[in-house]
Image 1 (cartoon, rainbow, N blue to C red):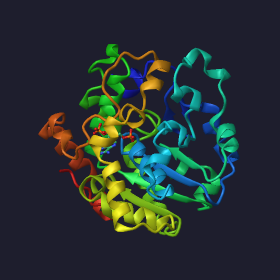
Image 2: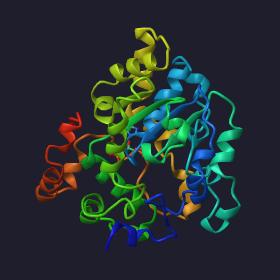
Image 3: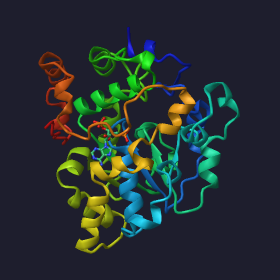
Length: 314
Ligand code: A3P
């Protein structure tokens, strides 16, 4: 079986990429209609690469490190997801009712500035104005082994009936032997390649951050993001933010610890893996055999290094 076979609900290939049932197909087709504002911040990341971590990071920097002011807001109210309806993320909207929910594009258009917009779509599928660099964009990269392992857990967690149906071979085949129309949002490599091929042209508007660096040296990432967003933070504030963003603190916080708890109600899920599962760089080693890991290494060869990407795997 393939990744696509296992996606049990309706799914659709749009612009050559497979989108799961809970995305708004029409919005993806009409993405160019979304007017981008110059004070928007867009976060683009492949599934399970630290998207919500980056949201919390940007949100807290925008609040100048004032943790209290954002503490009562659920993470899914802090941003608009370009391809997933908010009602769905907030829970209780079943796929059967899906046609009736508001379009993410209309919803984003109604959001007051300054907006935080989020997507798992890579460069190729973004609204045209975002591709041109009308707003600042933060791209999060995570090494492919960790991203695939984390994604496998998420997929299995949506339903107890899925338990272990998405296994490592299926995830690897999705990445290595299939194309963008067989794997959710396209392949990890396609996501990375899309951004890397455009990075020189977009240098002024795009900041690339790494999951692994967030784990190892979050203070540096906080400073980099603050500089990119024209914010100046005292070293004391930087440390407060680093503490706020720690795995332990974010996991304790109900808004971030199980960010998809509401959406799981939409899916009718009885899966039990929390959104914040392990938060480690090397956890993939527990789920990928040496052979599978070597298969991935052999597939990429020097491609990633040649693109200037040196991923840390532990
Ligand atoms: P794991 O499944 O490896 O634990 P996304 O938001 O893109 O879906 O990414 C989810 C992944 O980011 C999960 O990875 C989650 O634990 C990790 N993550 C989120 N917040 C984190 C934090 N504060 N520290 C470390 N990892 C974090």
